[in-house]
Amino acid sequence: MAPTVVRVGQFRLFFFSREEVRIHVHVAHPDGEAKFWLTPDVIVADHTGLSPRQLRDAQVIVEAHLKEIQDAWSRHLGR
Image (cartoon, rainbow, N blue to C red; front, side, top):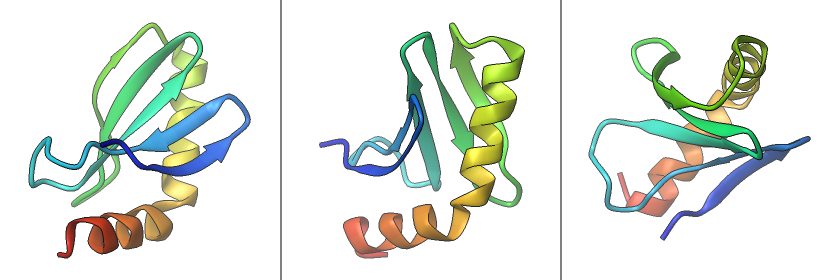
């Protein structure tokens, strides 16, 4: 299961229910995708296909929606 948390333009932020315990979010875009760790700071864990600008845009979106992502993670996983 991969619930969508946020959609902004061509970016879709989501997480996989059973992937791992450390809080993170995946960002999908028609050109590629990225995974961001959310704590202690928002940092890129991995990415493929995104240009440097798209990666920066994705990080800005993640940072702007950090509380929303964390709340969705807690609700969905019961943590």
